[in-house]
Length: 188
Image (cartoon, rainbow, N blue to C red):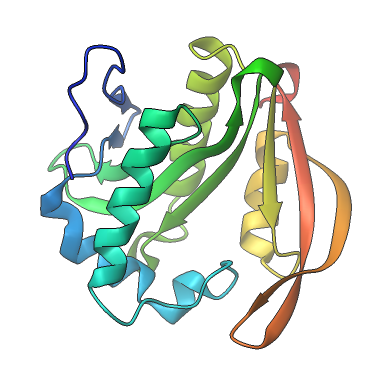
């Protein structure tokens, strides 16, 4: 579950901000990861239902490792900088290096909401995406009913570029997608 050590594929870089350390997820995060994604309030606007079994966390680790090795995704654990406690995730996924674009996603445990931590984590990953990875464009797929996420994206400079109607069906409920895009010069 730890970041791989294959010299052909360097490990996920540690990124730091004022209050956060973004690092590779590891086995010690397993219980906190399960607690995060089994929380209905966290996955209310997600593309999958809340986890009900620990096996979902193990499968998640495998998918993240596979994406990193394939060069199609990078997922960081969001940890508090002072004690390295896991509080969420932020990822670049659906990466297309040849097109210099990717999608961004993020989750944060509700006990850490309304403190600007998601914005801090996302901004740090965006800087890495543009400066170190030389991406040109970052996209976000957000449920338009998720006002907090839409507000966060707009505060960072994302532009709402479209609405994809009934894009997701989770637990028998359909949901739209508000599609946002960000170019390097748009980042606030």
